[in-house]
Image (cartoon, rainbow, N blue to C red; front, side, top):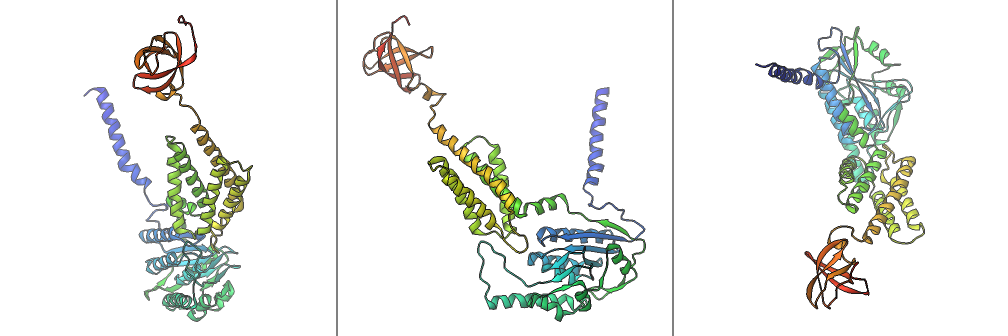
Amino acid sequence: MSARGLVRNNLVFAVLLFACTALPMLCMPRTSASDNAASPLVLELKLDGEVAPILSNYIDEGLADAARRHAALVLITMDTPGGLVDSMTEIIHHILDSPVPVTVYVSPSGARGASAGFLILLSADIAAMAPGTRTGAATPIFLPGFFTIPMDEVLRKKINNDTTAFLRSFSEKRNRNPKLAETAITDARAFTEKEALDGHLIDLIADNRDDLLRQLNGREITRFSGQKVTLSLEHYTLMDFQLSLRERFLARIVEPDMFFLLLLVGALGLYTEFTHPGMVAPGVVGGICALLALYAMHILPVNFTGLLLIVLALALFVMEAKLTSHGVLLAGGIVSMLLGAMFLIRSPLTGGVSFGVALAATIPAAFITVFLMRLVLKSRRWKSATGKEEMIGEEGVVTIALAPNGEGMIRVHGELWRAVSKAGVSEGTKVRVLRVDGLRLEVEPVTTAVPSGS
């Protein structure tokens, strides 16, 4: 074997070795401690922000990873205003089915476990709160959207009764106070950490995470299945379980500000591609942003009026380019888009699009839309600079006389062309091109003649 072949084979072997060893290491779970660590493992998850499908998936993955690592405890630190009922239900099911004991801890001071967070707190094996926190106010509400059905008294009672029954199904087995817990749903009642402890809604108050784990060490708990477990957390190892890159990306695009920007960039990109075909890049970027906006629209409570105001704004920008309104249509479009951004998303959980982001995105969008439409209108008045259409209207000189309806030769742009004319044209006469028929031009004489030598 030659030296070159030996080197080639070694390189191929090195690539295969990397693919078989390094790549699987890159795909390993996001935590970094050894599965065989001698000290008890406490896996910490963070439930921050609105309870949504992304967080539900994150909690599910974290609990599965804790079970795989044989962790001693899963600690979920929580600070949430609430969220979607379906996502809350999935998280509670994951907690109830977890083979590893789960502690939900409302922390730090000033945090809250409100609405859906209240039910998640009560579903845990151990429920704890930090000083200066609160929980409760778990009455189900309908968020505004495209087709919001008015909630009459019968429907409200059905939803409340279903939610309270779900709450009782696990709070009683957790030895908590279901009667008091129900008032958080029926009366929207909220509790401080001391009120929750005195009312037997939570198990303990801890100043911080270390204090919490210290109090839990040696504590006997009863799992949802009825099994008695004593927590052994002496010299524990604490580890964070972070959101994956995919989960962080999805969590970002469902924020109201980002949703508005994606919606705007998607509309502008597609508009640019439609008005200037062949640019490709604006169409690709606009299509991707539009699809991401549709995904966010599936999660967020989008107001149909806000969308209509944004569409009206784009229409006013286009009309500004076509009509002379002295800026009235442009100003109206800017106001309409700002109002659309303010109305686009409005809920007690997510808030809405911030005015600063709406203003910073609306002004450039307005001028870009007007500028592009004016380019389109201006291009329609341009004479074609290439192809057959370029010849129409050009003037040339007859080099071989044209008989009536007969063929001769003319010179145009320094090139000789066969030409025909309805009227006879003598040599040296100036003619104008009327039509292009293949390689033959139809011409008519121009009144001013030129010397044949030219």
